[in-house]
Length: 179
Image 1 (spheres, rainbow, N blue to C red):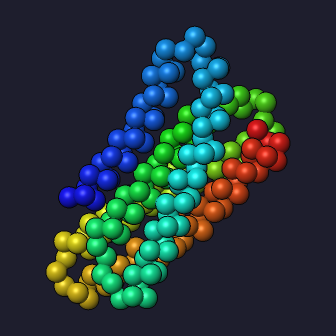
Image 2: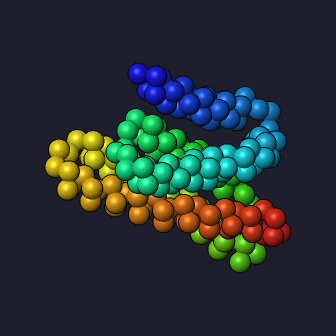
C-alpha cells in the first residue's frame, strides 16, 4: 500500500507541475514570456527521463544478480521511468511547438525533429515495458515469465542507451548553437 501511495504522490506532483505550466500559459500576459520559462524547465525535466530509466536498469541487474523476482519496488521504478520520460517528452513537445522553425538551419531543424521523434518513441517503449511487466505479474507459467522478463530487460537496456543518445541530441541543440 505504501508503494501505491508513493507512485500516486509522485504522479500527482508531476501532473501538478505540468498543470501549473498549462494554467500559467492561460493566465500569462504574453505567451512568449511563458515559452522562455518552459524552455528553461525542459532541461531539468529531462534529467528525470534519464535518471529513472538508469536507476531501473541498475535495479533490474541487481535483481538478476541476487536472483530476486520482480516485486513492487521494481514495478514502482518502471512507473517512475515512464513518468520521467513522459514528463521530458511533454515539456519538450511544448518547447518544440513554440520554436520558430524559420530561424533554424536545415541541420538544426533535422536534429530537432529527430530529437522530438526519439522522445515519442521512448515514451511508447516505456508503455510497452509497463505492459510487459503487468503481463509478467498476471502469467502463472514460470518459463513464460522468464521470457517476458528478459524481453523487457533487453528493451530497458536499449532504451537507456537511446535515452543517452536523446540527451546528446538535446545537448547539441541547446549548446551547439542550433536552437
